[in-house]
Amino acid sequence: MKSFLMTLTQLLFSLTMYALGIVFFGLALTPAVFIFLKVWAIMSDVGLWLRCLSTGLTVALGYFIFGFSLIILAGTVRTIFCLRLKEGTHKMFSLESFKWAFVNSLYLLINFTFIDFILLTPFANLLQRLLGARLGKNVQINSKFVFDATLLEIGDNTVIGGGAIIIGHVVERGFLKLKKVKIGKNVTIGSHATIMPGCEIGDNAVIGAGAVLLKNTKVEPHSMWYGVPAENLRKRHDGDKE
View 1 (cartoon, helix red, strand yellow):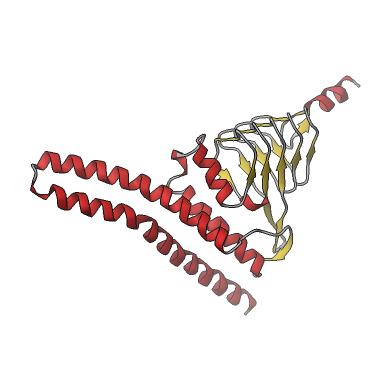
View 2 (cartoon, helix red, strand yellow; view 1 turned 135 degrees about the vertical axis):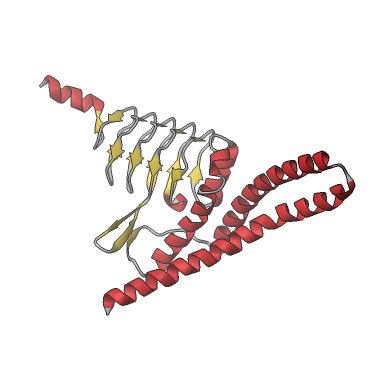
């Protein structure tokens, strides 16, 4: 019986998320559809090739209007409802878990449809800020796997490499655990590195490509960490000498 209720709850939650996706996509598409129909009507009396050209350009323009509309819509909803995640351990079917799933669903809507076009641009930073992240100046984000924005702090001039994963949550033994990730100034996160919940990375540190920082790892300023699991390169060399 318990298993059935859990499956039913998951099904209802999934259907709710699909419904919200329809609403958000529909609202974000509305300006693009409006412009398309206007141009279509204006170009109704011109030649076929000119009409095809105008249609193609309008569809392309509409896609970008849709993408930026979705970003603004997601950020507005998160801000209006003050959806900030709380650190701690939460039951999977709790209010905090629902907030976590909802906020991540907003991000995934953009992740699957538009985010590749804004990486390494100020719009990537705008998206993270709208979703609740605290970013310093000149932060460069080249990854679409930066999750749990309200649990993320990044200092000035930090670079997040392509494909890097930064998450503020894990699910363990039926519980959702949330903890902040704090990244200092002038930090380099290498390509496809993984930063787990609770990690704190000091200023001017380097996390090597493909490295995996386990939960709650404290990275000293100016240090270099590599490997799986990641270790301080200097300490590893000192240990080898001994």
